[in-house]
Image 1 (spheres, one colour):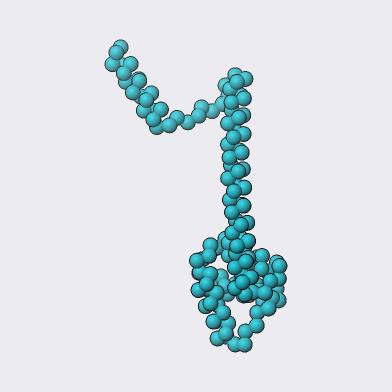
Image 2: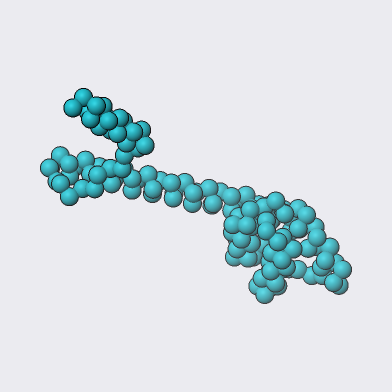
Length: 136
């Protein structure tokens, strides 16, 4: 997590604003709470942390290690699903585009962009042109 102390301070303000149970007797106790959470969750991904804080706030869960770890596991699942959905959409879009191109080519459409050539294909064509010049 980037700047864990700052993120945890923002989380505490958000929890207090939403009237979740955070009761500190004094500033030392508040600082110990922030230190403990920063030490425990410093390796957490920022996106997953933000999702977990949102989950805890929305569900009005008591801010403790158990509930935060539970929310983080849920956030990891949500993030994984988002990544998989994005990959599926990209694959579907690529497949649809390729299918549309094939369909247009079968119909004899000439307004298609040429597919980009790989460096190997370009080198092969250059070699063939060079060989043809040498024969002629």
